[in-house]
Amino acid sequence: MKAVSATMASADPVHRRDDPRVAAAPSIFIVVATKGRPGPTATLCQFLARQTVPIAAVHIVGSEAADVAGLAGCVPGLALDIVVAGAAGCSLQRNVALTSLFDRADAPADDDLIVFFDDDFRPADDWLERALGVMARSPDVVGLSGTVLGDGVCSDALSEQDAVDLIAGRRPPEAHWASGTSERPMAALYGCNMAVRARALRTERFDENLPLYSWQEDMDLAGRIVAQGRIIYTPDCRGVHLGSKSGRTSGVRFGYSQVANPIYLWRKGSVGPLRALRFAGRALLGNSVRSLREHRLFDYRGRFSGNLIALADLVRGRMDPRRILDL
Image 1 (cartoon, rainbow, N blue to C red):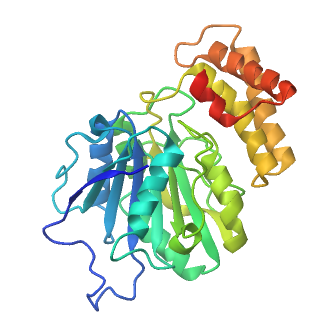
Image 2 (cartoon, rainbow, N blue to C red):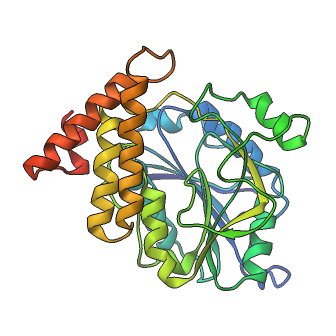
């Protein structure tokens, strides 16, 4: 799908490949896929402007013009490439950004970093610097995700002030699976904050058969690029995932994806059978119990209904992640 691009070039470029002072350092390219959240995306750009290392460019991809309204020039000095994909979908929008990146005159070199942030992720000011450091001392690492100090995705969304306080240490970090003081291997990346070496993305893309919210697209990508190097969690890169509730897909659609997507990835070979069945089974069990009572934040009844539709489709031999487009 052809994208319509509007680039705002920085008056003082934050990174020049022809500058001998920085030529030896890998370049950093940021990709942000957004839908319905131009305000939070502008706030993310402010966090990016405070990063302690240069950024070559920030590619922001909306599904439609309203998603990126007012973003051009929102942070002076930050090079933004604003793209309208013409359709919604996390995988699709990220792929539009990758195509745009690799079509640039100064396309990413093999060891350059392509960093994916959700529009509601708030990185510490040294997130990118720390990622560069990890990659420099571990050349066999092809992808990483960092410490999530707080995550509102499974509860009330965190506020911007919550993020500031968590990053500053004025509030203790929350318990999270992406936490801990030691670097360790990971089976999957966490899509809200992940850095991948550009060489791994020359041939691999996000799977557009996982439409809309593209649940587990990060696990799928990790399962394919791990053939090129290690995937790790690092405590060095810290940030907060607000877990904004706007722009989310419906409960029924998400419930269908909770079952259909892992099984699709198992059949595809990017996820092992036990992991796929654990994800699908956990969703079924959790939604069935939680659907007994109405929840003020999440449509568990809709999710459980979507789970059951996916199971019925599995029995009929017609289960397909793209079916959510018809639900």
